[in-house]
View 1 (cartoon, helix red, strand yellow):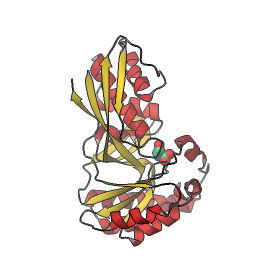
View 2 (cartoon, protein in one colour):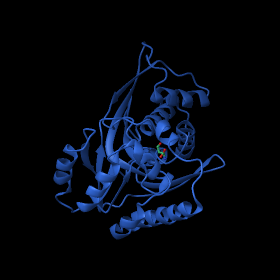
View 3 (cartoon, helix red, strand yellow):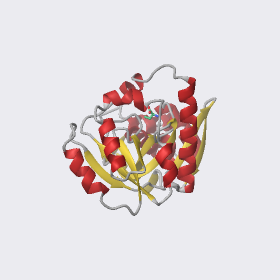
Length: 286
Ligand code: HSE
């Protein structure tokens, strides 16, 4: 038996569509237990990722049961699929003895997910910038600055990434591209330097949020309220519908006031205050 801890991740962080990512301290635990009973769901993403590693290493996968303790909200833009993929790849690597390197696992995980922005921090923890270069996942990782905390706000409705990506335009204006490059670069600098003042400008986005917010009707109200309550910035987490507000670590009062405000919003929103996680997918026990 092995047990793996995997973390939630947030992607895009406003302007960094498909490249910026951050691991959050919300965890799932996944147990792989050798069994004589077939795992019932062969389309399960953990199962598929584990099997992929066995197949690539030329080994036969034993019959396994997969048990999960789930805290990462599913289909909410908090990297639940990347967490499953990271757990499956790391579990498969350990159980098969394939001996693949972390970079090889990240590449395989990114191929399964389609883009690297949740996958890289799911494996490595921390704040990450990642990009695909002819199939290679090129990334930068930095320990997340401890002076920020994150108000993670998610509704009871889910939003499939495919539907949310389907809301995006095929082309954007050159000026919007310039806008986003500037903000994504500022965001990266702000996270490295721990500069909350920069974040007030750096989370703005013209590439995906304006198109996606029609799928989250209270997006503008919630982000405006978060800003008025002292958030440094707020953004759509990944493909949504979760909204995250970044706050200075020592801040007091946001959580209670925002929870009160959210009670009046359609969607039955939950707010969790969490820190970033500098730990990625980890094997806990053998
Ligand atoms: N960058 C991705 C998106 C994250 O926004 O669609 C969700 O998988």
